Image (cartoon, rainbow, N blue to C red; front, side, top):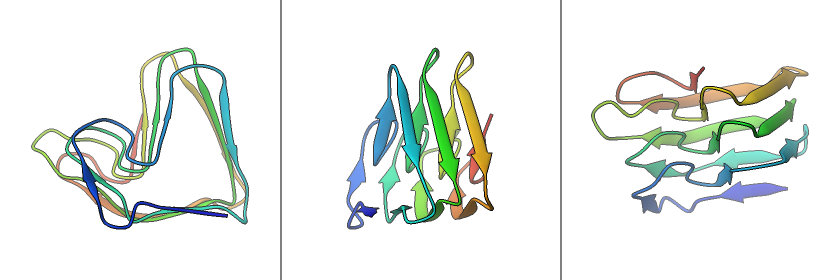
Length: 102
């Protein structure tokens, strides 16, 4: 499965997926790509108390474009949890902090 932002830019956090509560899981057949945000987490934003599991997932061509934007691929808010396994691949750019912000 591919979640593709189609190059559209959003003025919010989490361009493709924003996890406010509960859990989001993506495996090796999942790609999160081609999303741009002026906030944090170009592809994925995980809020406090929420959880993300990425197992072999590919994240690419995402961007966090504003000054002080962080986590072009993934932004983990304080108090969130994440499990990254199976060779997660990240290849994106952020204005302030690169692909992953913890």
